[in-house]
Length: 426
Ligand SMILES: Cc1cc2nc3c(=O)[nH]c(=O)nc-3n(C[C@H](O)[C@H](O)[C@H](O)COP(=O)(O)OP(=O)(O)OC[C@H]3O[C@@H](n4cnc5c(N)ncnc54)[C@H](O)[C@@H]3O)c2cc1C
Image (cartoon, rainbow, N blue to C red; front, side, top):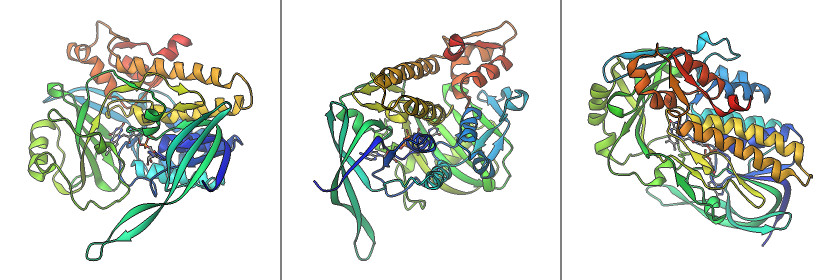
């Protein structure tokens, strides 16, 4: 094996969660490497809502203005059944630091994070694929293939990746943020538990003839989630939950090419079906669809890892757990957890209790995830609550793209008493 690199912390995966951990560590003066097998950041809108608590985290990290400058701000969420408005939830009434949601494609968020890392002198090691973990007494050795792209083909140009070098990274602590299809989780022999039914969505990014309203629209009609998110540039994202044959988990892999050359699942994602979906499932006016910019189908298995640390490796973000898409919990909780965890690492590095302290923090994260999976059990409708709202409260609360105290306060607008774990601790 050639090159050897070592650092106090090694982060595997430069998605939003790995990058927030790396940035927080860099700003705290901790030496960390961050690697990713992809050649660059993602090219799609994927998880596109930044919530008020994540905006506060970005404020602490010093770049909230860049996020807000490039976002479409939304102050309310309107909830429909299959035909009419049932509730309107206003963040503007909350009196919090950021009383709105920032709608921003994940591709833009990742680019901003990469450039903030670069300001701190951290370069993401793209095209570095983790291939093998060796546990050591005081840390971990990770074997990593450095990849190079080689163009192949003549009439139709495309490329393949070849291994240029195998490197050895040694670290005291490894943060595993390699996403939904985490291979490192499997190598660490950590299983996952299913905690709810898998939700599958057909996703369309569209340009319409009407400028989008400053609201997110969610329909919970017939037990299926349908959502419209407004975006900058007069675009919107439409997400339609569907039932049917299970999508392979590769549909969760991130796209790094911005242009859609083809799409699979014509029956599900073709224009004809999109128009039928709009007709049947959107009780609001979507405007005339001028053009579909991007379409895909994505599975969201509701599951969590049964342990979150193995030796000196711990799981973060989608590698650790996943939620349904409408409440945008995966990315927002992930951002907030990555920041908290990185501060704890900074405080505890070099101390014998570091791993015990991190375990306590991971237990705290897990309590919150469990509460989100079972919001029905954590909530109680008051008498003034609408019957429909009371009956649908679990799905409704899971769909609101906020977390923590903000979620409790929005629930109270619906006359629902919600107690999340952080309030129990308080
Ligand atoms: C098409 C699509 C639509 C989505 N829509 C929504 C939505 O509407 N709402 C929502 O909440 N969420 C949505 N998501 C999910 C959201 O994008 C994820 O929750 C979020 O990206 C998780 O961040 P992460 O940093 O944990 O993982 P990721 O962003 O997945 O990053 C993991 C990184 O690890 C890298 N990696 C993997 N294996 C290795 C290895 N062996 N070595 C080195 N690097 C490795 C990958 O290249 C990747 O960059 C969507 C995802 C997709 C793909």
